[in-house]
Length: 127
Image (cartoon, rainbow, N blue to C red; front, side):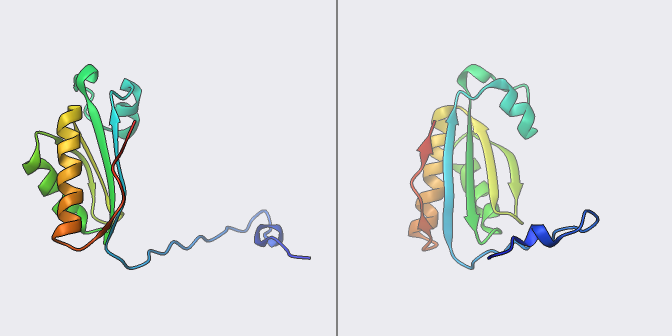
């Protein structure tokens, strides 16, 4: 009978979780949230002064994680988006702006990653 690792831990023990990243050049997530609920901005720590009726949030995740620096630069040059969050350690970039600005930024990042950097890319999704 297989034993679950957590069954053997005492109440005072702490489980240790190891997270690994597989080396690769890829865009693993590219998503646009059109007209998000106002509360989502607050939960993400984004600027609450955004016009919520015309707004969008763009989220992208890349490996290697340092590529988010390049992605942030491309996004701001491709459209009028604002950088909401750039994490060069996790590879996550969040941008805000109008739906068309977020779409232009996501398209520019994915196109550059694929054609110039040789990344494997996922499709851009939108809700």
